[in-house]
Amino acid sequence: MQYLAYKLIAILIGVLLDLILGDPYNFFHPVKVMGNIISFEEKLIRRTGARGGFLKVLGLAAVLFNISLAFLFGYLAIILFKINKYLYLIYTSYMVYVCLAARSLHFEADMVVKELDHSLERGRKRLSYIVGRDTSELSEEEILKATIETVAENTSDGVIAPLIYIAIYTPLGLVYKFINTMDSMWGYKNEKYGDLGFFAAKIDDLVNLVPARLSALLILITNIFNKNIFYACKTFFKYRYAHASPNSAFLEAPIAGLLKIRLGGPHKYFSKIVDKPYIGDLDEKVNKNGVYFTIKAMYKALALLILAIVAIYLKLILK
Image 1 (cartoon, one colour):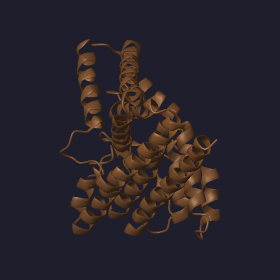
Image 2 (cartoon, one colour; image 1 turned 45 degrees about the horizontal axis):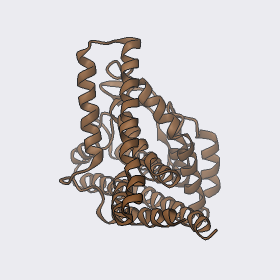
Image 3 (cartoon, helix red, strand yellow; image 1 turned 90 degrees about the vertical axis):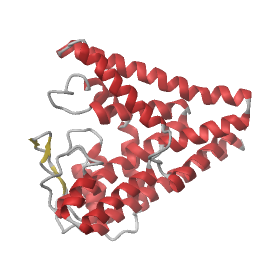
């Protein structure tokens, strides 16, 4: 019970740090280290000249190695609790902090809007920092829609999912973050990464199955008094699988319904048009308020999840 009490405090401190600080660009951050490791692994694998099935196997080996590495660093928190509870508190709080990206997601989306206010070119360039698609020919409305999609999808990937995994079992937070980072770097269905990132993408889909659905539920519950809530529910049930990913539309569909807009559709990736289904029946004009609505939806979902975690932990602590 004492362990749960300290862990709950660490979770709350970590969330607070993320909301206040975000991800400092000029400060040591484990996710940057993860990215460097993944890049190094890719260079090693490419040197083998592997292709096809063998390249998939090497990609899987990299995923399993990184999962093991992340688990060890995550498990260090449990070891520290036995050594010194204050060290545990510091380490676990920091781990929660680096696994979350709510403030950074807010910042990046806000910067796209602000740069777009200056010029279309600046808006396109800023959006390119946070999406994988080609932004060079996007219109103002397409930029805003892409930003909304990014915030919606990352409500699960960058906020809800890591917090759920940490709450369940501390080491799983870093494990999830490493898997998610690998997917963001290798999970492209193209000639370069189709084989190398095959298992990274599949495992990322698997670990996001429950968090994505819970995130959608949190968004709908926290917007229950929104005038468009019934349409949002209808849109969610109709379009929740309207995506190549088994999870992405679960987040985009309720937001599309709440804003009465249409998301998705064809996008250009690496100079090739990728035909994606549309999400939503209505296509009202999108403005920057839609971006800020989606950011608020993310924060409200996070707040409800924190309340649920606190309630569950307190029940276990006081049992």
